[in-house]
Length: 82
Image (tube, rainbow, N blue to C red; front, side, top):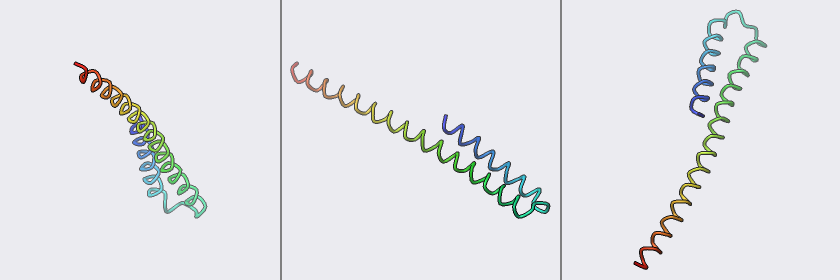
């Protein structure tokens, strides 16, 4: 999910850069600065989406690891008795 959002944000960034390149001759300094802020906002959005999804993935991996370790400990105890 986060890769899809990051890709979408990257496409938005590319579109914004293309738009800036096409209109660069007619942009005023203020418009250029505002457009630059838009590009930075897209990048920040991508970074935030990736960061949040990475945290969630890490939590899930830790949870699965703990479950696997519990199962391994149980099996070791069980087979020691057999």
